[in-house]
Length: 569
Image 1 (cartoon, rainbow, N blue to C red):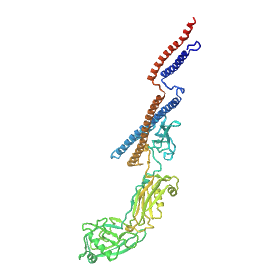
Image 2 (image 1 turned 90 degrees about the horizontal axis):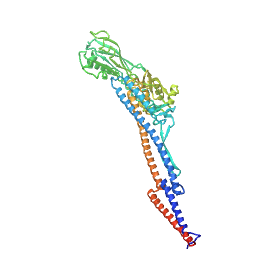
Image 3 (image 1 turned 180 degrees about the vertical axis):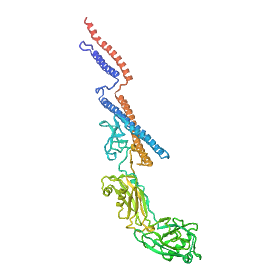
Image 4 (image 1 turned 45 degrees about the vertical axis):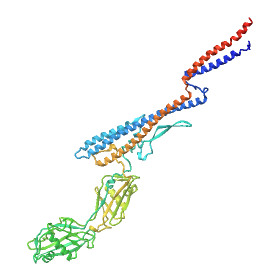
């Protein structure tokens, strides 16, 4: 039905044209912006997700930058540590050269001084963005300070609350080469006892033997029937007893009985030994002429007469001495005794076992340090002893634990071993261990032996010098001690480099992961909100065509009223 009031066809055509126009506007906007979802009205869910993910991408990008900065700090510290390792290796080579005979140590020292300065320069140069992990400014020694923590961004975590950064801690106590208060890798440690004044390597075992002496035989000599030799023998006299004196007599009958001869001739030293043994036995004297320590034993070719105590007299001493010679030998001068009258060629009387050590240099027993050692006197069992800071201060009347001389060390050892009969006496730079003679008076073979050894400490070993203090021209440390110290610095530097290298590797991997995650998230956002340009282009073309058709349809629909109007003309 055609109506002049209502043109339904035109209304329908217009409505269709409006729909096409709206779609065309949307498609043009998508094509121009490249976005399928540009605002919340386009797709609230996708818009919300994409907005959140865009925020995450920016956060991850910032975290990636922070990780790269951390990696740069780590790489700087690692490079400097590696260079210092090279310097320490060169140090060790110079020490080996300094041990060679004929090397001018002063020239080696000049090189070492330059190497030390180079190590310090490298450490001070290892700064990135104002931070230096190889130089610390703690006023206390690092062994006594709390951890010095530096943080670097090392990873990120996406949780319900968003993206957060995780930090890795770097303890600068383990990477510091030089610290203001000491304790860096190139600096000495505290609590060390070094060689404990020379006591550390002690393995003192004392020895002694019975009193004996040698005389050079001045014969041969012939005793006639009326010839004789009288003399005194003082046996086992010592500091703790007067010994026993024996009056002895030699004549032709004694000689012939001892030698199995009839001519009274003492032709060699071996003969005189036999004669002496004869009169020792006849008079029940605890002595012998068969001693062999100096002479090697009775021998027809030897001109040595060696006599010694059998230590059976009951006296604590261990000695033998000839005296008061009265001779009546035809053709010989008064006092002649075949060499016995002359001072001994060699003499060991009243030997008490002693074991000396040499004191080297002062040391300090810190509050955390202890010295342990074993000692034994005589037949008593081995006992263990301890010297600590309290012991030092109590014995020496100090407050700093300083042991500055051989006298100090001897006093400490004497104090802690009180009661076992050990004597520790100092003379100059020497300390001598022996049995206390007021407890163990016996000398010689019966004397109490002493043992002092198994010296060890807590801490077992520490670095006792700074790299800058190395001086091969002084006697503060031996070359071997310097080598041990440098090896220790190398070990700590290598450990530090390993930690830094591992951290650097992790940061590089994390930075690469952050970059990949950023790309992945960006791609994911694009899948949600980016327009498919091929599809949008085709749709745009179709909508433009539909718009043109809609306009034509509207024009056709508007022609119907015009035809009715013509009926009234």
